[in-house]
Structure formats: structure tokens, C-alpha cells
Amino acid sequence: MSNSLAALYERPGNGPFGAFDRLLFVPAGEKPEQVTSDDPIETRAITGVKAGDAAAFDYLVSKYLKRVTSIAWGIVRSPQDAEDLAQEAFVKAYQSIGRFRSGEPFGPWIYRIVTNLGLDVVKHRKRFRHEELSEGEPAERRDSADLPAIAHELGSRIDAAIESLPEMQRIVARLYLVEQFDHGEIAAMMNLSEGTVRSHLSLARRKLQDRLSDLREANHE
Amino acid sequence: MSNDRFLERLRIEAQSLRFEPSHFAVTRMSARIRERIATPTVSQLLANWMRPLALSFGAIALVSTLGVAWYESQETVAMESTIAQSNIDVEMAGYSFGD
Image (cartoon, rainbow over the protein chains, first blue to last red):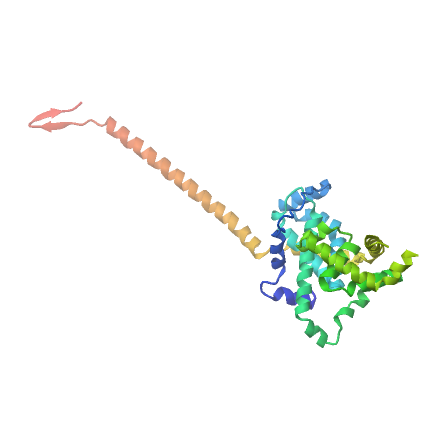
């Protein structure tokens, strides 16, 4: 586990259980729709895990691990932390599988867990940012070498523009633009109201339009 | 371009920015997850010890209760039949009364 994550979990009341408690919260008046899993193998795997068959969890890990890691990376922007978060999310999901309602898709649940863990890491980093900066490593540039294969310059510019946004706008924009979640899904993952997500996205869009103005003009022509 | 179209265009372009962990990283993470869920937590460890113990004590208590109840019922029956079978002779002023 990397230093920042290890330090986070060592802090009392700040560990993954803190994030977990928040999973029970549903914003008032915004009860998410009951979605059922359309993958019978997934449903069987969850039933197996609930019955104590740890091997059945492999299917869920293999199905969701890449996406979960990508979501984590989008929030913490470090491959090592993203790996740790993804692992932590799956372990927590396994340990509290009893609370998971059978028949529902596993995806939104594990995405919510990893997002909450990621938000905890971000909060922790913010609190200790002065320490990071004193080490002479500018926080906003530290992951530049970790960028995934950005195929073209446009992708690189969009990535930089998203990264320049304030924290919450950045995370919401990344989940919407890169991970392709809709407003409702993002709201559920981040324990925010859908209105708040739209508001963050609207502010993000304005800033992105400014920073990528030439892209906007090129499309006008 | 409308705001929505701008965002939709960005959405299409930004798909390529998803992080793809390498095959090696996926294998490593899967192995670590498997290892961690295979290791029981303290509560699971305690539960693994306590459950059979609690079951054993429960079974012993149940068998003892049933045994004592059965023994007592047998004893009462035996005493009643002994009393019923006994001849009771009562002597009074030289006279003997009984079966």
C-alpha cells in the first residue's frame, strides 16, 4: 500500500469504514430506481459469495476490476493508489456482501465503494498538501508520467483541462466524460443530489469551454 | 456549438482517457484480493471458534434438561406405583386394618 493510503487508514475514523457508512445514505427524495442484474452468472456468483464461497468472488473481480481501477485512477491520478483503492474496494465489498441486495447489479455498488474511498484519499491529500509541496513535488504534475496512453493531442488537452478543474468539478467531469456515467449514477456514487452533480458539471463545462475554446470554434466552422 | 453538443463531443473524445491497467497489474491485483479475502478477519476467526463451541454447549444443555426431566418423570411414576402396590396396615387398639 502506498504511503498516502497507508497514512489515511491509520487515522482513526478515517478509514474505509467511514466511507462505507456513507453508502447507506440516500439523498432525500431521490430514491434510486431499483435496477436488477441482467447477468445470471453475476447473480449466482453473489449468491455463492453470500453462502461463503470465496472462489465465486473471482467472477466479480474479473468482470469489474479494470473499470474500478480506472475510476480510482481518475480520482487519485496515481496508478499505485488506484490499484490499492481497487483492491480495498473489492475486499470491503466482500466483507459486507451480506448487506448487498440480491438481484441488483454489482457494478453500481462497487463503483460507489471505490468512489467513496477515492474521495477519502483526495480529502486526506488536501489536508496534507503542504507536506507534499514541501517535498518539492508539485501535486498537480506528479502523475504526469502516469498518464495512460493518450492516443492524440486532443485527448491530452482534454485531460489537462479536466485536471485543471477544482476538485469536485474535476471528479464529476471525469466520471461523466471519461467513465461515461450519467448524472443519476454519479449522484449515487458520490452521495450527492442529482442537482448538485448537474451544477458541478455545468461549472466544469464553462471552464472547459474557456480552456478548449479553439476546439469549440473549430466545430463552428 | 450548443453547450450540450460541446459536452457530448468532449465525452466522445474523452473515452480514450480511461485508465487501462496492464495485464500484469490485473493479475497482481486479483491475486492480492484473493489472498486478502482468504485470510479471515479477527471477527471471522472468533466466529469460527465460537460457533461450534456455542453449538456444543447448547446441545449439552438441551440433552441435560431433557435427561433430568425424563429421570424425574420416571422417578415419580416409580414412586406412585410403589405406593400403589404397598400394603398399608394400620393398627389401632389391638385391631389391625389393611388390605
